[in-house]
Amino acid sequence: MRIFIKMKFAVRYLKNTFYPLNAPENVKLEDGQMVIVRTEKGEEALKVFLVNSEIEKLWEHSKQKSDPLPLVRVMSQRDLQTLDDIKKEEVEAFFKCQALVKQHKLSMNLVQCRITFDKRKITFYYTAPERVDFRALLKDLTQTFTRVRIDLRHIGVRDETSILEGVGICGQPFCCSSFLRKFATINVKLAKDQGMPIAPGKISGTCGRLLCCLTYEYSNYIEAAKGMPPVGSSVMTTEGLGKVCYLQFMSGKVAVKMEDGKTKEFDKNDIEMVDADVNVEIDVPAINNYADEDSSNIDIKQLEDDRNSSTGNI
Image (cartoon, rainbow, N blue to C red; front, side, top):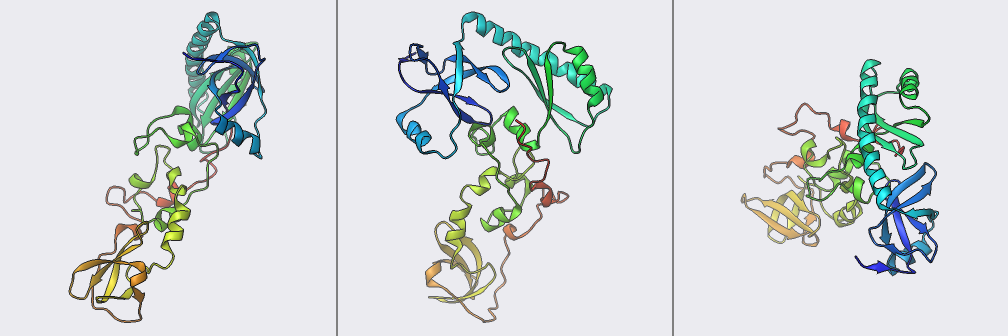
C-alpha cells in the first residue's frame, strides 16, 4: 500500500459526510488505514481517505465546512482486535435489547446497535410507526449494560435502509448508504412528470418509499417537456392530423397516431396542437394511471414521504 506523507486526509463519518482529519504532520498515514478519532459521541474507529486536489478545492469554497476531527492514534494490531471484539459485543447487545423489546411488548423494530470504540456509549437504532414510551425498557437496559451511556434513537425507514445497505434495482449500492447526505422530499408527481409507469414495484425502493433517484434528473425532464403536447391531444403534423400517444422527453420526439391508424414519430417543433376532433383511438399508457396489475391493492400515496421516512437521527 502506497504511503502518503504531508497530505490532507479525511474520514467518513455521520451520514456519508467526510470530515477533515486533524493529524500532526509527523504522523504517517495511508489511504484506507484505520485510525481512532475523537467525535462528539466518543472515540470512533474510522477509515482514512486521501483527499485529492479537486476535493480540497471544493472544501475550501464550501459554505458548509465540516469541522476537522482530531486524530487520537493510528490503530495498532491490538486496536484492530479490540474493534473485532466490539463488533461481536454489538451483536450480543442487539439480541439482548431485542429480547427486552419483546418482553415489554413494544411496537418498535430494532435496526442496529453501535458501540463507540471507548465503550462509553451504546446506541440502539429503531423504527416505529408511532411514538414509543421506552422508559421501562431503558431502565432494564441500564441494569443490563452497566457503566455505559445508553441512547435509544428513533429513525425512519429511509434511515434504516441507509444503515443496513444493499444494492438497488439499478445494480448499484443504495444511494442513501453510499453518498446521499440528506433525503429530498419525493412525491408521485415526480414520477408522472418523467413519464414513468406508476407501479409501486418500479418506482419504489427497498425502504418502501419512492426512489431517491426520481429527483436526480427531474429538472431536465421539466425543461425537455416544455413545448410538448399532452398525451391524447389532437395535433397537426407535417403528414396530417393525429393524436399524441407517447412522449419521449429526452429526445424531444412525440409519437402520433395518424388517422390511417399508423403511429409515427415527429420532432416536437414539427407539430402543432389543434382544436379538432380526430377520429383516432389511442391506448393511454400506464404512466397516467395509479394502478398496477401486480399491486392493485397498494395505495400509491403510501410510497410518498411522511414523518416516518427519515428522522435525521443517524
